[in-house]
Length: 204
Ligand SMILES: Cc1cc2nc3c(=O)[nH]c(=O)nc-3n(C[C@H](O)[C@H](O)[C@H](O)COP(=O)(O)O)c2cc1C
Image (cartoon, rainbow, N blue to C red; front, side):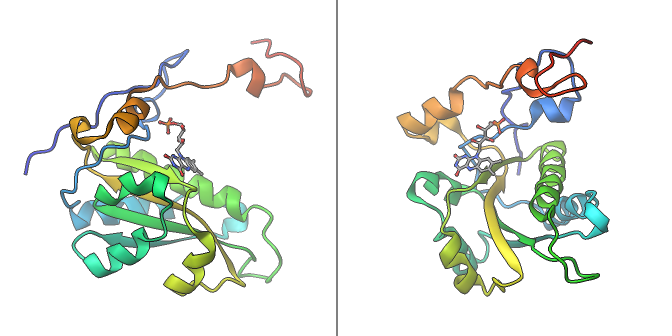
């Protein structure tokens, strides 16, 4: 099976940053070709090594692959209609964050922060392996607890992710194609970074 490299839609960065950061993006076209299990395990290993408050590692994921249609159908049924494009991806993930620390049972204020960091690790590894990924808040959180047996007193069901080999853009409908081709944008750095105190422009 031959796979093209991820579609090139590099971030129009203001300064050169690492190739992986520049190349990662959220496409809508996914190939249904299976991802090698070794690669999937590598993605999870990348996630495992993210930093976290008190090394609490609050992230948990449920994964399904298209080769297991029953499981795949169950998880993908949680997606909102607007994210139906994700059903072509060969790997779907649902990410949860543990609310309290293991070591003392106290609330972990940073459980969602840490979980986001772990998933960015995973997405950079996705890019490094020639895969593409797309995160999604558009899913039925309420339904997810019962459908997947997530203990809701302890975990919050956060987001879903599609991962796969890059797909053929020409198979997207007009609306999705337009979104896939839209220019990538970010806020200017001056809105995000302050020098010494809030609101003070960067002086580097
Ligand atoms: C937590 C989170 C939730 C998102 N939810 C959705 C979603 O439901 N549907 C969708 O098409 N994209 C979703 N996105 C993708 C963002 O729209 C995308 O990351 C953003 O536009 C920046 O584009 P880029 O990832 O290509 O740089 C989500 C991203 C994140 C991080």
